[in-house]
Length: 135
Image (cartoon, rainbow, N blue to C red):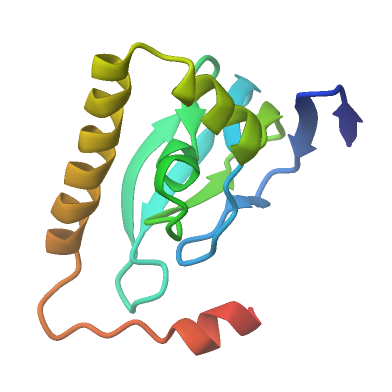
């Protein structure tokens, strides 16, 4: 189910449905308002890992909105989950309006998190992006 306003969209994801997929670009930022979401890394490999569970009041998808890179992890609804989604353009508008030091801090944090994420991929492990995009 989708309900829209000018800047935000309310969406409901059913249990088992992907909110975000690792390796894809989808720069919406989601605020979870109801339900639980499992964050999975390595879903493109033979050994996916659970990074955590997010629930009401938590944000997902923010890194891709900041740097327009593919998602580093997937997010799957563990139960029916409702989110408020913000587009990347609205997110960037708000980011640009921030204090410059706070904005630089956020950008540096995202950059460092991506660098650390590279260590989560085992040496020699390959990701077949072409096959993943067909799923």
